[in-house]
Length: 195
Image (cartoon, rainbow, N blue to C red; front, top):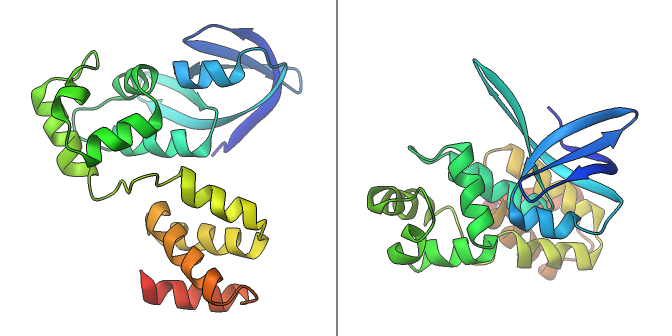
């Protein structure tokens, strides 16, 4: 699976980008959020969601891991396809979508093209517990600021075990506050007790 593509922007429109990496041009579908992050840049790093169906194979690209994570949550909801999820991320910022789901703001979600009443209700019902306020941004930033590679490894390991990134970030941050010098094994062990 492709995690990201790092290269030079060959073409850029508000809906898609061509990123050249090692002589290969990758056509990547993007949201307006990602477009604004890539605009006026030559060298970029785009996080990829590889979308494969019987009759098509597409790359969806995102400026941040958090936006990609939200995209994956959205397409996990019955009735929300990749095109609709991209439309949502183009209409509102990731934080606005999270806040609307947490606040159960059906009208705000319905204002997005392609989202009706039933889809908005289903989004809230299925994602409210999975989305914690500021899930990707604040907690992820906290770990980055600590610049702690061990904490990042612990987060990755716990996410691979099936826990949500938001909950894992909280648990690992709590363990790191209590014991900043903890080993990787200790962080994982204590974080598991908090999850």
